[in-house]
Image (cartoon, helix red, strand yellow):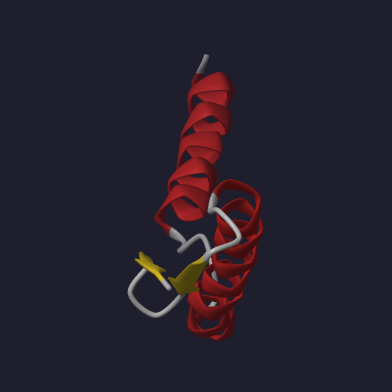
Length: 68
């Protein structure tokens, strides 16, 4: 019984160790947002060109449609 208790405590300690670690390293966190922003911008650009009429000018900085 004592051996099972010790084994269970070791498993709990290992689980606590892995749960307390951060998901991403500092290098991954630093590069994560720009990559996501570029992908979002590409997606918005494709959507804007498919939806906005040809006589409109689409300003990607402020996401507003300006009729020309």
